[in-house]
Amino acid sequence: MTIGRGVTATLAILALPVVWVPASSAQRNAPLLFVSNEGSHDITVINTTKNAVVATIPVDGRPRGIHVSPDQRRVFVALSDEQPNEQSSRDAIVAIDIATRRVVARYAIGTDPEQFAISPDGARLYVSNEDAGTATALDIRSGKAIATIIVGIEPEGVAYSPDGRWVYVTSETSNSVTIVDARTNTVVHNVLVDLRPRAAAFSPSGRRAFVTAEIGGSLAVIDVATFAVVKSIELERGEGKPVGVAVSPDGKRIYIASGRTSTVSVLDERSGATIAAIPVGKRPWGITVSRDGRFVYTANGLSNDVSVIDASALRVVATLEVGQRPWGVALSH
Image 1 (cartoon, rainbow, N blue to C red):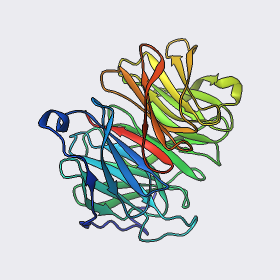
Image 2 (cartoon, rainbow, N blue to C red):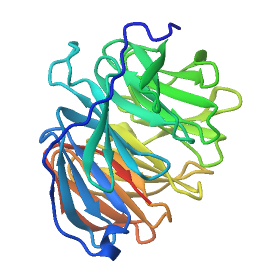
Image 3 (spheres, rainbow, N blue to C red):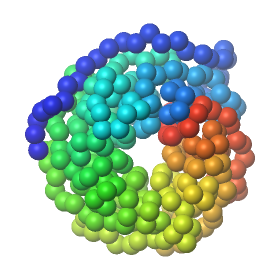
């Protein structure tokens, strides 16, 4: 581990135009869905009560990873340029103020940030630097990088345990999950999983972690206490190319976005059995679940839309047009 080497963090306020639809007070207080569109370089904002687009926020770069801060005041977005293996000024994490829907801060966080996770207390970001084979820890308040951690080859997915103790970083070329102790910013274990792991998510209890393997066509279930894979679940007969994964708030269901088959697999968390495979838009990538567990949302990269799934009925109830090549989705509460 090296501390801050080769990484700088800066803050800047960007004055970019925002396009939005005027909303009533009730609509402004509705839960919002934020969609990162890597093709059109913007963020779509959706009122989830009305299932209506209410704003489009331009960003300076290709947006992918996206998360809402625990205090619900900001949306953080990972940006990069279109040139692989080259670091540029567009490689950054930006913060968007939810109230004004404007970019208010920019953090230079190393080369090609793709995914990241926010600590439960909102104090830190952990970012995967795909080209460099590292993960960077950022102190949000100061805007400074506090650690650069060597992980696997081509790191991508990042997940923070609910208790704030562990950070899991998936690496798609080394087929591994690097487990970082967030208290010390040190690697404590590496877990081998199926081919090309992409995304990770923890159960609400923090006892299990779930990792998708795109080429392997499976979901690894990791016991957090022992750092061991306790189960590998085949998805869509191994042909689904799973990427995004999300867990219901009650921990009873796991939702996986399978890009090749354009479906969302719904698994029973306890048994690992498939409850349903729900057809959605083309190439679902990012996926998230509403706080009450009633709805699931997917970003569909080839159909340029978002699918809204009723979790009780297990079917799509709305399809919303967004920007070009939607990648990630994040909800405010």
